[in-house]
Length: 83
Image (tube, rainbow, N blue to C red; front, side, top):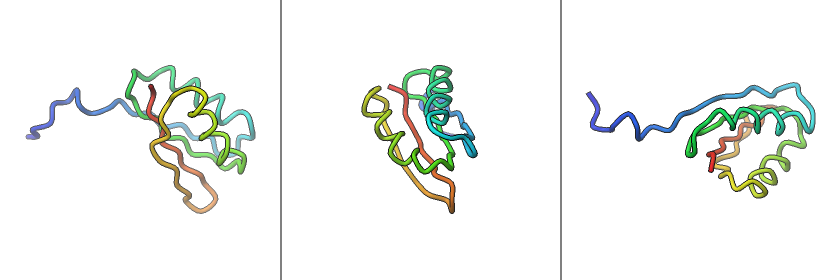
């Protein structure tokens, strides 16, 4: 049994944008974010090199929080918290 109430855990989704080229990774991530409540987390995996600049710019423009950015080999992994 856990002491953490279930409603403290953010809703999370994942989106695999590997193989897609700009602007599709950001456009499809935006669509997935619409499915989340405020505070929800979206993890996006992308291989487009432009995504490295596109996702931080997207978050600055929309007010969503870029929680983390990582690289796993050729795959960029972004975690975004919906505002």
